[in-house]
Length: 252
Image 1 (cartoon, rainbow, N blue to C red):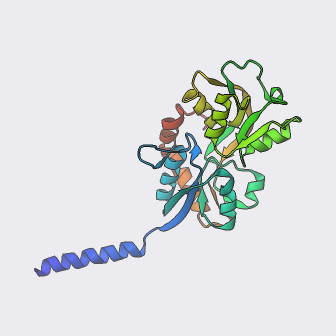
Image 2 (image 1 turned 180 degrees about the vertical axis):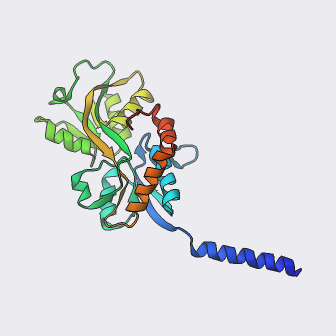
Image 3 (image 1 turned 90 degrees about the vertical axis):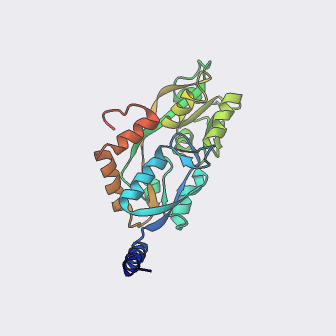
């Protein structure tokens, strides 16, 4: 074995040890598996894909952390952050005053709102007041559920579902008269699996902003915000946005 080869091997091992010693911290990231097109399971690969999944990948690379991704029902995400069982969550999470009391949020990364979805042949619903006394599907633990409960006097028919696919199937089968949920998710369903069978009606309700949620006091809030600012400035955000939602409005 030549001396030159040994020196090369030694240098390689030194670099490997150095790289290991400064390896990025691995954070526990969680998402909701059924909020299309933000996050959803690719049936062919078994991997999570979607707008949020590409955003968190870019943010992690630029902020300097690795991550272990897991999924859970949406209503368990904030409690998991609160107890410290996870470090970061990205799942189309609306920034609210109540949530900010128990977890930290990044700067907003997506502007949204709430929207009504009904069957294609439904001509009775045009706005929120028309939902009085109707069976309305929404998602457990969501701001759309809270909005319905506050806005409808006759809200006995409001039915929370664990997953968005459940409430859409309930609408398609006639188990509920309408669905009320986040506008991008509702619109995506109406233009894909529900095309020709359902339609969105009425205005956007309760303008909302989505943020990346972190456990309270996280040191990663600053680096995450810097990473978000970078991807917006260099055009990466626009590329990801238009892949999943089409042309990006000028004010995004």
